[in-house]
Length: 486
Image (tube, rainbow, N blue to C red; front, side):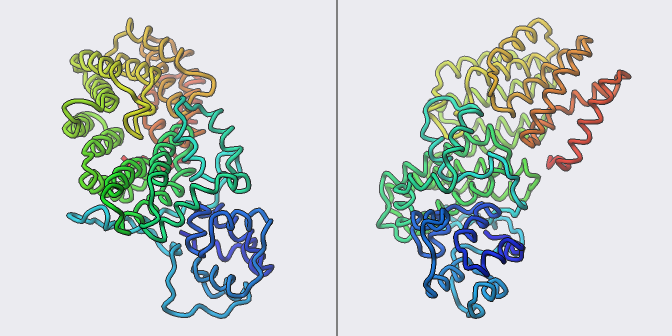
C-alpha cells in the first residue's frame, strides 16, 4: 500500500532522478509501512537482496530491473518519467497496490477464510522520526513473539534498536522461506507456519507498548501475507493453523482500527476474525473479538458483549481468556452498582490461577498478576469499596515497574485518581490523573482517554486551580486525538 502523494514528495522524486532504488525502498518502508519481504515479492527480489539495496551494499543498474521495480510498485507515469522509463503499459499485474482511496474489507458472508481478499491498510501520513517507528516491524514482531519472558517498554526498545532495516538482514532465512512460500504453496513448511504464528503473538505484545498508528501498517501487511497463503490452497495440515493465526491477527487489527477511530475498518476485521474462527475450528477467537468490543462501550451493552464472548469459550481450557472475561464482567457490573461483581472477581482469580497466559492464545500474554490487580482496583473503585480500593491500589502500584507498558499505567493511575477524588483527597487525585493523562498521551490511547472520562466529570465540579488546569489539558488532548469512535 503506497500513498499516492508519496511519489510526489521531493525526496522521492530526487531518489528516482538519481535512480537511487535503496532510497526509494527506504521511503516506501518509512511512509507506507511495507516490509522488505513484501517489497521483494512485488519486485521479484529476495528479502536479502532488498535489504542489501536499502543498505547501499548493492546497486540497481540494469534497465530490466528498473522496469520490474516500477511495475511491481505500480509507479504512476510521472514517477516512471523521473526514473527514466516509458509510461506504464496496460495489463500489468502488481502485488503492492497504490492506495488511491480507503476501502474497508468487503463482507464475505458464507465465504471461507481461504477466499479472503487482501486487506488494504489505512494511509496514516508520515511517521515521526523516533525510535519506535524506524524499525523493521515484521521482524521485530516475530522476535518479540518468540520471547517467553514478560516484555516491558525498555526490552522492546532494546530489541527495536537492533531491528532497523540495516541490521535485520542478519535474520534473512525466515523471510526467504516466507517469500518462497508466497510464490507457491509447495514451499510452505512447519517452520514458516511457526514463524507466522510467533509474529501474530508479537504484534499482540507490541500493542501494549506502542501507539496504534505505529503498528497498524505492519499488522495489515502481516494479515495480507496470511491471506495470500490461505488463497494459495495450502495442505489441510497448514490451512487450519493459518486460518487460526489470521483470526488472532484480525481481532487485534479490529481493536487497533477502533483505537484509530475507524469503525468501518474495525467491523470489517471483525468479519475476517469470525470467518477465520469458523474455518480454523477455534471459536474462542470470537470470544476475543467480543471482549475487545466491550471496551468500546459501557453499561448493559458492554455486559452483553462480554456475555456473548463467554458463549464461545470451551467447557474446559482457555482459562486465561476465561479469567479476562470474568474480570471484565466484574468491572462493568460494578459500574452498574451490582454486588455480583465481587463474586465474579473471585471466579476470575480462580481461573487465573489455573491459566497459562503465555501458552494459551496470542492475546492472553497481557494477563499477568499486575493486570489482575488492575481489574480488582477498577472493580472496587466502581463499587465504592474504600477498604478494598486501598489494598488493590497498593497491589496495582507494586506491580507497575518503571518501564511498565504505558497503556496499563494510564488505566491504573486513572482508577487511583478516581478513588482519591471520591474520598476527597484532591491533591493526590489530581496528581495521579496527571500521570494517567501523560501515559495516555504517550501511547495516543483512545482506551486510556475513555477511561479518564469519569475523572474528567469529577474535576469539572472542582474550583481548584490545579484541577481546572488538568481538566483543560484532558480536553485539549481529547480534541487533539479526535472524537471517540464509541
